[in-house]
Length: 270
Image (cartoon, rainbow, N blue to C red):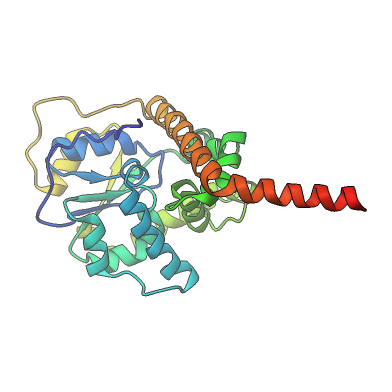
């Protein structure tokens, strides 16, 4: 069983307080641990990928926003998904940046500053590459087609929308440009008083001052994001392969075998 990397043991009843709108692979696991040390449960892609009800809700949000199917999500709908979370980050959150800024106008916004070349290398190796291997292909193109919800398929769709991509190649090509444009847009639409541009390695001071929190009597979290993320991704894909295979055997194998048998008989009679 794949486990959440969350350190939160509480829920937050005061609603969304922070929109952490940096791209994945900008120290997001360390930032998540920092927020939660400050008493702010943080919604991350790890949480989405492990919660089937959330996956269904975000799928509805995606279909409404990007395909015009259903009602676009607003404060009410997001509150239903995000009850108990104080900080929103990562995917699929970033696919709904404009909607969330509008839904939570009083929430503070954090951007993390990471060298663009270092970020590109990390994102390409830890996010793009896992969507490029044979396991991902099997899960996305075969096994998850027989499941509901479809977390891997939906995550890829949201990431493609974020980076204005239609395949792996265009996704990779658009990484740096999209990251820089995204950060510039946040600076443009969010007031300076509402925005913190946090530089990795700055410690507790800037974050605690911005959030009005006391500085913890312990070092700022420095988790090895790449190692943790790669381990988690590997375990998750193994889980999806197993679950997908079971779904395929239950719902897809008989039609496929029947179709193959029909083709064989037609050819045999020809």
